[in-house]
Amino acid sequence: MGLRAAGNLFQLPFKQKDFKLPNAYNINLTCTKATSIISSRSMDFPSAQFVPSRTMGNYEPIHQIGMWGENFKSIDNPDISASVIVDVANKLENESETTSHEMLAPSSKHDQEASKPFDKIQRRLAQNREAARKSRLRKKAYVQQLENSRLKLIQLEQELERARQQQGLYVGGGLEAGHLGISSAVNSGIAAFEMEYERWMEEQNKHMCELRSALHAQISDIELHILVETGMSHYFELFRLKSNVANADVFYVMSGTWKTSVERFFSWIGGFRPSELLKVLVPKIDPLTDQQILEVCNLKQSCQQAEDALSQGMEKLQETVSASLASGQMGQVTYIPQVSMAMEKFEALVRFVNQADHLRQETLQQMSYILTTRQSARALLVLGEYIQRLQALSTLWTNRPREPA
Amino acid sequence: MENPDPPSMKEELLSLHIRLLAPFTGSSKSSSPDPITEGFEGGDFEDLAIFGMDKVTRLASEKGVVLFSKSSCCMCYAVKILFQELGVTPTVHEIDQDPEGWEMEKALMRLGCNGPVPAIFIGGKLVGSTNEVMSLHLSGGLMPMLKPYQTLC
Image (cartoon, rainbow over all chains, first blue to last red; front, side):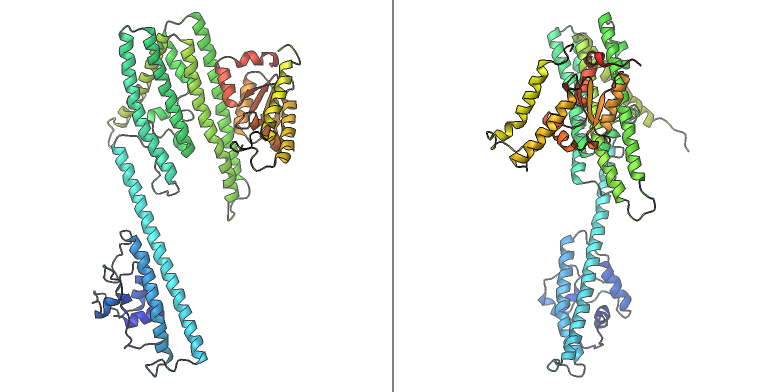
């Protein structure tokens, strides 16, 4: 093969044709850049498969001997590619010693006379050039490998998302395929939450059935109380799960990604609005005593005030983040200080999400104090059914017959 | 709450000081490191912490509703809005604009305010942070506490 090619590759200032190359060059270099260098500089190099030299024995056999122009499967052999590069690099290093010797004494084929100081300098220079070139080659190979791995990762993420959507979970934009900025900790936090939420929904439906049959059957207040407490704790459990995933990715919770689109439409800071909840519930749990009506009214008002305060706090957060991002001059080379300022502010978002859930929990808790056991049981049923209706609406809406565009 | 200088407050101040000094009395040297006192020699921090605690308790014992806040904190802003809606004007201390702000922050954390802001005191008594205020409000317990301090608007 390409004695010429090797010569061109390393730009050694000699053109000897009887120079014997070690079989390093028979190895499949997993570097497409190397390929292009070689192919562009060795016009006379045949693209046909070359026959490995009979002196192949020295080196660790690399199994994929192929054409220079072949596409390299670096993904499948990530380990081999790195070691191949190193291997080649080493071989080339060894080889350069011998070529320099040859080069320095063009008239003689032996290196006994290659000891003049000037020649030594020349040799050193040549070695440096080669070392630099090898470095560049190695770097290009490495970068190529990284790029391939990244592409593969993106592909996997996309497949995963498709698979999940097929399972019916409304994973809106949960995995931003193509953005490798998401750490594995965040991904696993989200994945764990979605699994837990699926389980939670199943439990929820079971509870609903139990409550329904309990209300129809005339069970004792004590037994009913236990069911109510279970139902309440179940909601509190959801808030706890949400708090965990909020620490991993607050925007996931904020956008309600795990919920159906209609539920998301009614969302307020990552969940239902407590005052809305009361508006839905109260008419359905008649009859209420006058005392109860008064207390519910007060609760409604307190909820409303607390919600307003949090909403305004959120607006303020938006303003401060926006101001941070927009501060300083535009069109500058770097905007890292502005962005890192804004990042600090975003820590506050987790507090707001937690506080909103706290408000929901307190609202449910207070209702359970105001209402009798039986009324609480009814309230839980109403709430559960309302959520089911929201979800049903979402499914119907998604599947509604549409006119072809 | 009619008594302008309730004896319980003095007791509270005393107990606060005792809590603060406890780690330095040598008995709990082997216990798990306190994130607040960790890294400090007993001597230096003692002074700073007491200094901060003094200031906090002095400011907190002022009449009415006292809110420790930071001008950059949006949750503090939310609490301010809430008090506004309830017709109350709290005395606000922005600890990020106070020269002794760091000591005050440490003192508030020692009192149990994880934020450490917002921290709300009513009539000299610590109510807590946002969680406690919200719970209190939804349970109907906040309004009676605020009643003496409501401003007519």
